[in-house]
Image (cartoon, rainbow, N blue to C red; front, top):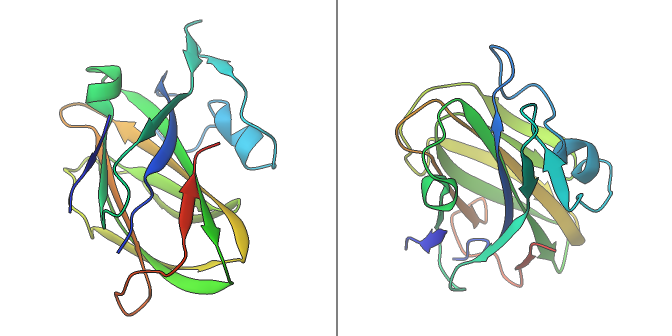
Length: 178
């Protein structure tokens, strides 16, 4: 379930999880989707957890034209302490350009753009937009954005917004999760 909070945020996402955490650094291991998505492959239709549970991608959409989107993983997956979830979208840019990602997560999060790690925060925290602000370079055409969000307990969310470096709406940017 995605909820538009308040210019444009990605309105099409694919999500899969929850995967049981492995080890004391749960953002480090690849639970399956990274091997596919970060090497340019199409994501597998299903993934098997360490406990043998089969997980499938869900495609979710929010109303277009929102400046911030909130991904509420508890609504999608229920209470799932000590797990991680993946979410991805494609940002289609008409030109190569600099952008600013404003994000927040409950709990920690790892972020990739086009296969490169932009940020990794192993942290137990509540979610606030702007807790993480990153400048990034979009290339002309397709740009893969992948998030991995950890869940220790309590709330389990991520928020995301894309702006120009000076805080204006990015012109011509479209989103697709397939």
